[in-house]
Length: 201
Image (cartoon, rainbow, N blue to C red; front, side, top):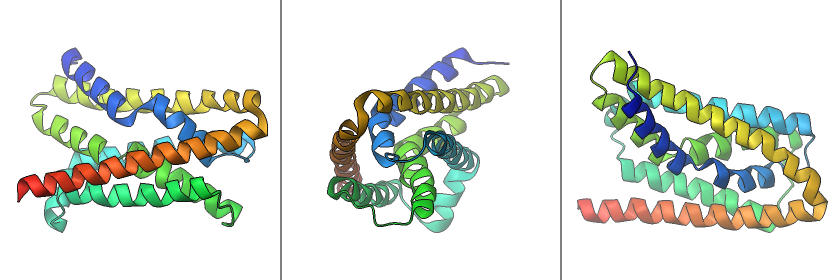
């Protein structure tokens, strides 16, 4: 009733794509200056949003994309543009958005989606669900999805300890660094989407 091979394959795939260690500096940069309790809540919200989006696409993803006539490259390019806008805000140090709105936006966008639940993770889950032919494989798929989200939550929650060590100046540095990393991720995602469009035409 449990396919270990399917679990291991999808878990490793999602770990590489969602990259919990790589998300840590971006999470710290996006949540800098907020109380620890708020940061912990945002970490949980982001994971729940990502898990919800991935579960939704795992169950109905291909039907949604087909119904809306959305290609995977288009999804990648849109996600890349969204991430790039957030990265520019981090790099320029914009803080003029109301605190509560920022909390909601950061937990939902870009942390929950498209940073965690990005096109790569969504497509991987859609394919894994389609390939899982028996109950054991399906259990392996959904257990892997649950496991990776637990890992991401633990990594982001424990990363808050880093803030206590690096102090305010270090947080500013991490914020700028995360902006640069996020911009690179966004540009690469756009390039990948455009490349797939060109290759498909």
